[in-house]
Length: 175
Image 1: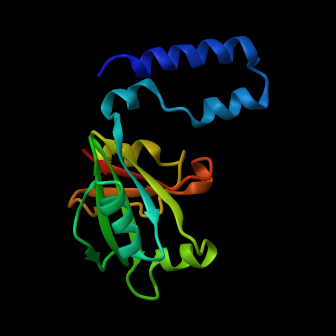
Image 2 (image 1 turned 90 degrees about the horizontal axis):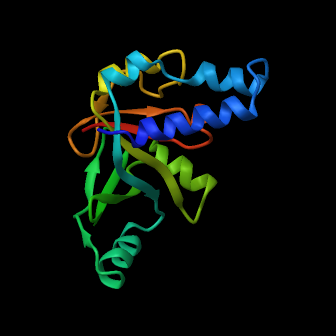
């Protein structure tokens, strides 16, 4: 995988060098959260797999994407181990995942109590090696499930704590 990452990384480093001194707290925070070059070589982040939206009415949301917008939409699938029903909306090389609570202990139930109209719940990024990613992120970013578990696509996933990811719940999924 070229160099968009390398070019971006070089540009960011150049901006940081010119705008932040090595004694500044912002510079040290950024350095402390960065990943070593050895780690970058052992695994990589790929594309956005999906954006998940928690919905209070799964049928209504499914109808919007299928009947009004004309997208290909999967059938509703219960995932009891995650406490959700999922519907995937196919959008070229990415997807939207519609999430609806399955049971009262569902994490989506809690989300919808705080956000009754629903809304974006998480973003899912593909990684080349989920186990190496988890190992290298230890001490830098908290995982909500430290060991990968099988997600909606039948692949191992790990969720990263939103407080460590700029307020966004991030799901990492094995490519």
